[in-house]
Length: 585
Image 1: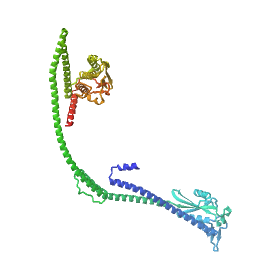
Image 2: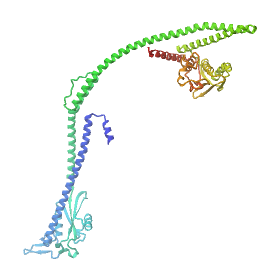
Image 3: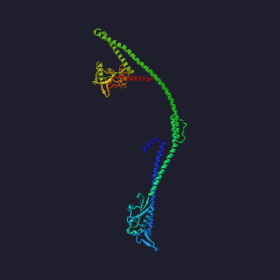
Image 4: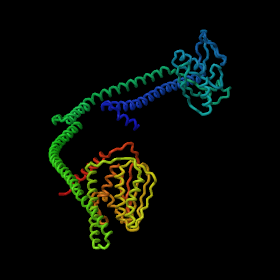
């Protein structure tokens, strides 16, 4: 039932239609139940009247029979077609005028009266018994069943409606008890006073009665239809006047308000809840209008402030871009300017160092020049370090500016790792460090061979720098799903969890590490350009594992990652600009 109500609520119908349908259904159900009860009671009343009629006929017959029995029978004029009965002795007499009379018993009178009533199609009755004197009084099925029940159950009457030849009849039967007057004729049959002698059944046609019941039902149905239609019409008119018209006005006001044409002069003067609702809406509309105007003013003020802030931000961004370009240009020019004399100095130092070494070999007695050779070596190492730092700065600046290109080829990563190991073998032997590699024979991957070798050199240089003498550095390379993984393990002091991301930032250094702070930043930029991942695993107590993952792909043709590098460079620039903008003055 609840589901039907929910479906009815969701129907796309007008409120008036829904209300009329709901009320009509309720009225139909209520009237249906009421009229059914009324029809049933009317039918019961009519049937009761017919039953009472049958009882009255039965009592009238009993009174008539009793009067005849009390008078020992009656003599009536013998009609020509009436035959004398053989069941009563001396049943005929003749008066002085010669008229003949025949004696009639209660049973005979009952039978003749029944024939009279039947001829007039009003009703008929029948006297019967299980102990027959006259075979014509034999009981039918209904009467025989009733007589048996009267003898067994001491019933007073039995009523039934039967269909005889497509017509309905009410059958009423009640027992006849033996009285003192009855013994004159029936004592020889063994009856005593109070015994059931037989019964009288009354049969009343019911077609007219049922036709009347059917007519009453039709009248009730027509009355119900008229009542429902009248109520629906009245409700429709009332809904239109009381509900729909005010609702349309209220809807019109709401539409006008949504389109900005609302006027508070449009009020509904119904004096009921609709007027209260209209007043509440009018108050709400007024408050919303004031709030909207106030909000518009604030939005205009905020927009003006945002435009000014945006203008300043754009100007600051422009200035920062110009400053960043000038900075990058300055670094590039300075690096180039520094690299040229540094290269010359390095060449001169190499030449002088070689000459001193040759001179000391041929003139061992000139030991005073050993100190000079040592100082030249110090100058040479520092100039090499300065050149590396300048080259690193140029590399990372090119990557951030998007001017560095990567040339991808199918390279054997195992061979690149082997070259890096060979490059550091002498330095490892000087510190007694054992380089242990676990790499497959062939690990082909699409990379820029020189740049990946640069990453490996940076990671292994860090491992050698921070590993104690006699330690072990392990290099692993293997496949992992759709990637190639390279790991460099060392026995250094370790890196705390808070520094795992910072070590890949430019110029970042902690108290345990020395250097320019550019090697890992360059390595991260190179791996990012390869669409890979670089990271570090360390608990900060002992040893670290630097690793990088590269996509396991095959180079069908040489490609350039200049666009990707430019994208990374723009991200770096945006990050730097954002930091400068958001930093406190």
